Each structure stands twice: as C-alpha cells, then as structure tokens.
Image 1: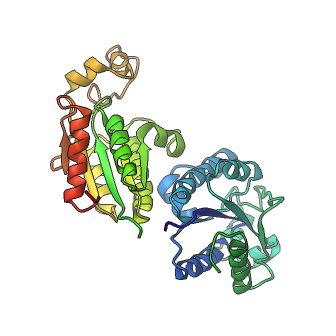
Image 2: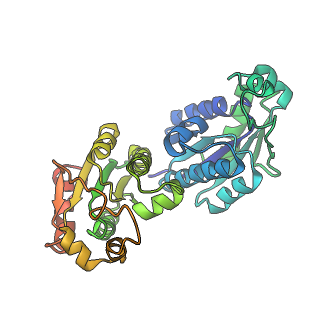
Length: 178
Length: 178
C-alpha cells in the first residue's frame, strides 16, 4: 500500500531551528516506515536556484520551485518536509493553494533576539556589520503565518517537545499512523 | 510493495517525438500500475528554470535541474520520464553518473530533414528566418548519445513500434513486469 503524501512546510527566521526540527521529524517518520524527503533551503538553492539572489522576486521564485518539487513528490506518496525561510506570506499561501496533497505549515517561532544571540551560522553578526544584505529579520521582512497548522515555539521549547507536537498533529490529522 | 524507480531520459531534436513517446510510454506504464511522472522540457522550464535562456550554460543548468528532480522522484519508486532536448552529451552523462536509480537513455533519432519538414511548433521556420536564435540543429549543436540504451527511430518507425520497443527494454531490464 502506498502511503499518503503530504507537505510539511517549515517557515521561520534563519536559525529558528527549521532544519533541526525537519531532520528530527524525518527521522521519526522514517522509523515508522514513511517515505520522507527533506527539501532544505540551502540544498534547493544550490540545485534549483543557483543564480537567484535574495530580492523579494528571487525569494518568491525559489519558494515556488520548492513548492513545485514538493508537490511532485507528495503526489507520489512521499512526506515532503521543506525547511526554507520562505519569509513572504503571499507566496507561501500560493504554494498552499497549489498543493495537491495535504499542506501543513509549521511556524518555527523563535524571537529575533533569541536566534540572533544563537547566530548558528554567524549571519546575523555579518548582517549587523552590513557585510551581507537582505538578511531576513534585520533588513528584510519576515511575515509570520496567520493561521499555521502548527506553531513550534523553538525559542522556548525543546526540539523533543516540538518534534512530539508535530508528530501528534500528523497522527490526529490521519496522515501518520500512531 | 513499492516499485523500483528509474529514469527514462529522452533526448533528441525539437520535434523528434520525445513528448509524444513519453506520453505513450507513461500511459502504458500507468496501465500496469507503475507510478509515473513526466518531466517535460517546456513545463520544467516554466516551473524550475524561468529566466534561463538557451546558451550552453543555461541549457546545462536546466538539464541539471531536471536530473536533480528526476533523481528525487526515482529514489521514491517513481518511474520518471524526461523529455527535454538535452543536446549536450557531457551534461547528460553527468546526470547519468549522479543518478541513484537505473538510468535509461532513449535517443529519439529523427533526421533534421524530417523534423524540419514536420515543424510541429513552427520553430524551424522561425529559426531559418533568423527570428529565433539558438535553435538546436540549426545554429546550436546537437550531440547524439554514443551508447544510448535505446534508439527510437522516430523519423522512420511508428510511435507504436517505438513504444513497444521501449517497454520491452524495461521488461528485459527487470524494471517493469511483463
């Protein structure tokens, strides 16, 4: 029996824990035998969007491409987990409208102060020093989802708690067996 | 039981019958219950490569993206059929090397004279009138595969015969049940 594909779409600031959560959820799903594919922001940029920058238009194009590929995979029963900042609400909603499988938006909600203090990739420091432009949260906007299916309080709760809450949501929604 | 994914990679001049053959093979495979996805040249350009032109570099980037997506799908048991001109041998071979599932190259081998006479999309006429540049076969090279798994003589044999030969190859290769 082929499984029910769906798209688990993470959105949130750089350093908000999207990729970490994505891998944990992926791990848990694979243990259950669910076919999983992670479309990580950086990897997708490298393979599908080289040459695109960080203007609103280019970011939107990148997000559309992730949505296109996610759709293709989900259609064939894959649980697709995307982990890109995807800062603009309108384009996330467009991707959701075009999804042909259940679309679950997960807002990795960590305050800027927290992710900037962590600064996992050292990007915030560079952005404050004006060494890199268009940093989301600093000189580029981040539009939080208005009605995400899940809010992961990644600034406050542990990765384990967020992972468990996401899995519970997927089970309650009937997308994953308990 | 999930099926064995593979990539059926068509290459050939514009108008050589790649898309037609791709749909026929896809139809036949779907009848057998095989999950199929067609990545058509034009559709992929629209969704993954908008902004790219027809220079060698841009064509290569486009082909790499098709290869990347084909790989993702094949990995999850999908039979992926690509139908893009993909005129350069080196990049086709690169995609083949990076394939993580069986990769079957089908050369839609129709002579230029034949496809130009058909001129399904009216492109050859425009290219001869110098209204469009970089037309493969006219002012851009087409490098035929040296060792394709299948040669479909689309200039001479019928779509039915080509389709049947491709399906037979897939069966003999153990990729599709008879």
